[in-house]
Image (cartoon, rainbow, N blue to C red; front, side, top):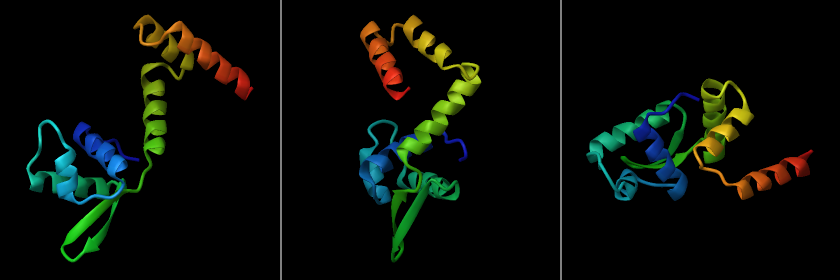
Length: 119
């Protein structure tokens, strides 16, 4: 999987939500910094070239759909972030969120329960 730009990732989130969409449908979902229709169409074609998006043709119109699941992308994204920013250490990830006060003691206890259940 090739890396996505921020705008490409935003478009993928919309396609995951809608499951199937025409360019006008995607454009309607963008709330801020709406690109021009032709710009958005180009971005979606780039996603197609990268293997993230497929389409069904209806004459000259295309209905797009994701080829990569949100879960598969999330897994790749997280593995990449953990490798490059946390030295491949899940402990470092959890410590980071604890220090940033982004995770509570209750959430940590829930994580421990999940780990114990899976072992």
